[in-house]
Structures are given as C-alpha cells and as structure tokens.
Length: 426
Ligand code: ASP
Ligand code: MG
Image (cartoon, rainbow, N blue to C red; front, side, top):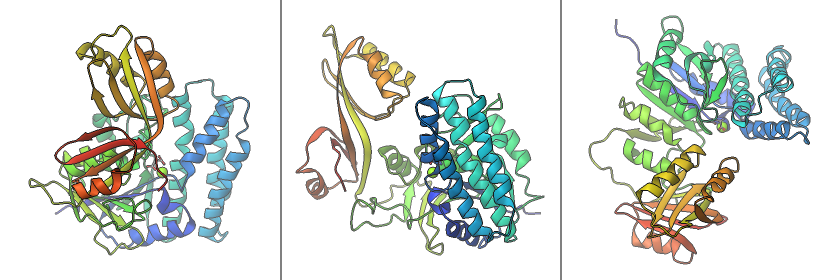
C-alpha cells in the first residue's frame, strides 16, 4: 500500500491571536486531506507578555500577579468567543495551566534566568495549543494534541536548547503514528530535556520546530502560514512597492534569514535542506494564492534587490590594551568570549589594531561580555543602530537608500551590500 505523505504546517502567533484566527486556522486545515502535523506558537504577543511576567517575578520589587491575570483574561476571552460559553474548557484547562505558572513561581529556588525563562515562557505554547486543539475537535477535526516535550528532545542549554536528533527521532516516530490518527497538533518553540525540564530553542523558534519535525518524519513539505502573501523583497511595513519572491533557493533563504529577514527563522533551513524538503510560505488570509516556494536549486534563481533591516544593533570596537596586532590568537580569544556569552555577531571588520563587530543588542548577555572583554581590550561602542542589507544590489538602489545616511561600517561583496547605520523610523 502506498503510504500517504505528511505535510507539516506552522501557524505563528499572529495567526492565532484571536478567536477569528483560530477559526480561520480550522478552515485552512479543512482544505487538506493529507496526514498533517500542525505546529502552533503562543497566541499574539503572549511570549513578550510572559517575558515581562518573568522579569517582574525575578525582580523582587515588582509584582507580576496583575500581568498574569491579564494574560489569563486574554486567553479566556478567546475561549469564550470560540465556544459561546458552551464549554467548561475555560474553567478547567486554562485555569490549571495558569495555576501551574503560579505554582512554579512559588516553589522555584533556581535563580538562573535562562532556566526560569524556559519553565515559564513555554506556557504560551502549551496554552495556545490546548485551546486550538479543543476548538478543532469541537468542529470535528480530530487533531491529537502532542506535548512537544515528549517528541522534541534537547539539552539543558536553556533559551537556546540544542536539539538531540537521535533521541527526537526515536520518540517522534512512535508518537506521530499516522495509522491511528491523521492530524497531530503540537507546540513550536519548546522541547524536553533529559531531566524532565522544559527548554526553548530560541525566540521565533516555531518555524525551526516545524522544520525539525519535517526532517524527522520525512515530510513531503512544510508550510508556514503567514499574514503576508509569501516572502517579499522587503518588509511592507517599512517599504512601499514591495514584490513577492516566487521561488527562493535554500541557500538564498538562509542568507536572507541570517541578514535579519524576519519571515523565516535562520535555523529553519538546514533541517529542510538536508532532506531537500520544500518550504512554502503562504497567506492564511488567502490560502489559494501560491505564496513562495523555498527549494533546492542547482541553478542561481534570479531575484530583484532584497532589502533587509536588522534592528537593535550595537557596533563594538576592540583595541588590545598593549597595542599588539589583532591577529589570530586575539581573534580566537575574542570569539571564545562572545560565544561564552552567547553574543550574536552579524558583521566583522579588522584593521591593524582594532577589531569591530556588529552584534545584536541583548541586555542579558552583552553587558557581561563587554565587562569580560574590557580586561584585555579598550572597548568602545555605539548603540541604537541598524544593519541594513541589500541582497542583489544595484548602484541605483544603494544611491536611493544609503547616500544620505550616516554609515559607521560597510561591506560590499558581489551579491550583497551591508551597512551599519543609525536606526531610522520607517
Ligand atoms: N512564541 C515564540 C516567540 O514568540 C516562538 C514563535 O513564535 O515562533 O518567540
Ligand atoms: Mg511568537
């Protein structure tokens, strides 16, 4: 018997931010008769809200209770609207998950920020998938809810868990058994550790979850359902006259994501590329439209100039205190330090005695890294910058976007122009 292919769908926070979004998800799912694995993120801005609750809890002077109550109300309202008050779901499941957050906060003795982050922030996905699964089943879409922590296994590198493919393969093959169920629904972003704790795999990591599951289950394709028509050549919230890219190679997609294109999480491409599993980016508002296909391609696919703005950048320049050259040994020392503090480097430049790096601003990691680097280097930095990238640039496009800007550092290759400059309101 020919086994039916598996499709992996990912619905992000924006697609399930309201009852209407959840209903729309059901109507999208209803269009397909294949085996499905549906990966869902936290609803709307829940992850940000949980980050604030965590920060208040860890800061002994602030109270998180009101924020938590507000977040619960947001979810309960969605549930009420979905079930017209005809379900006891809201009193049961939602309340018990919010109580679990409170119980963790009361009992927890571990002060490690990353550990606490993952135990608390992961509830965003657990709650959203509980609601979505209850709704799907209420409209006769039999989606089996899976706790992602039982199938996606990670180490305890909290907030950036490294996925254990071997362990995840073993458990996923068992859990996603399509002979007993056609549709499975699980959380993006979260994984389980060998110590039965929760780890997350990086902000916006649900795309990555979808890609890993597709790889493990040898899915036929992955679709990321978005509120835009596909991958565009620029963010329409920042630029006018954008156009959709119909086909993008894996290599191009990984470059775009690395430069800061928000449409796909950078780690998403590798698991798909490794098994040549195509990725579709499609609109959940207009599911008939073709969207963008990201695929393996041996030939270079022609693309128009693509503009990418990466915000919250800091430019750091390091000069050895003893005026020695910045060469291999000091470079390896610098990178070891950055790696230790999880600082993400986006662009580098060296001169005889100065090494400049453009990095993501992250208040938890950067300050500690700078303190460490100050021991051997004079450290100077500029913040409030953006990294502006033009892939497939033309001189006209550079002229149009860069000529009147204050540029701190720039790099030009045959395909890509990159500029570190003052952040601009767009
Ligand atoms: N909810 C998580 C976040 O906002 C994961 C995701 O959305 O992909 O970062
Ligand atoms: Mg999200």
